[in-house]
Length: 318
Image (cartoon, rainbow, N blue to C red; front, side, top):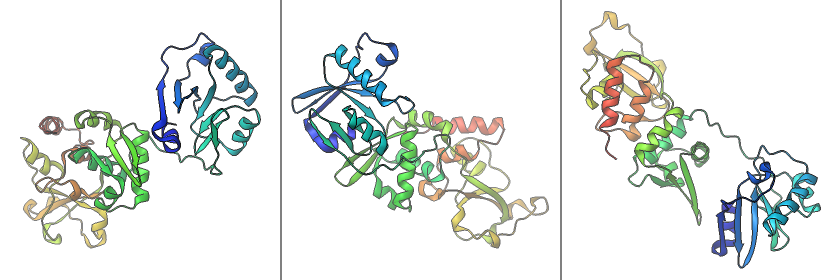
């Protein structure tokens, strides 16, 4: 709603929520109301929730109740309306503001669009891997914000993937997005320590699969993960077999021969975790980042590990 006003009217709009509600039926008074002023023209905007079902004739009567009680012109705000709903509202001369880009304010003007695409459903239960990747990217940024196209470049993702991820973070209440010119900048809504607490219900385990293989089968330096990484972050003793993380897309799983560690010297082995997103993007001194590490160990019911994770998270400095 605010974005629509800002897009078409710019800085000549002032909008603030009305706290003192009129003495009318409770279900009408409970709706959010905003005092709007556009270049000297004032009216009250009433927010209609997506699950608020009503016939247009009832809305016309409600508008008259609001206007009589508030002694002001009234318009209704919708997140989204269909073409049929828009045309019905106009026929009944009911002022409204709705997405995408629908404004009908007879006392001021109108802007009507032929775009009526349904808003995309956003899963707010668990993060997609790219969403968790974007959250970590913002979390570890110095200012906890980033321009969307630069985030896509740094994370080696398409802009479409980053848009889906940012939409999911927005739906979860974790970020806000602001458009300036052609750029969209994303901001964490809370300071990092609070953001981590808020995000806990949504985080996923980044590990897709674990394999124990010969160390000689891997090239380059290992990125420590699992209990090996946790031992670097805390006082936990390291495991007998080193644990490391790799991005699943960077490994040919068919070329890795899984080995039974009971029959081979542990020094010659390494347990590889295949990650759903690239762990190297947020690596810290040769080990995976602490938030991802905590997520990767969430299924290990071990008091030693739980204590070490708490110790690691308490030591984080933002």
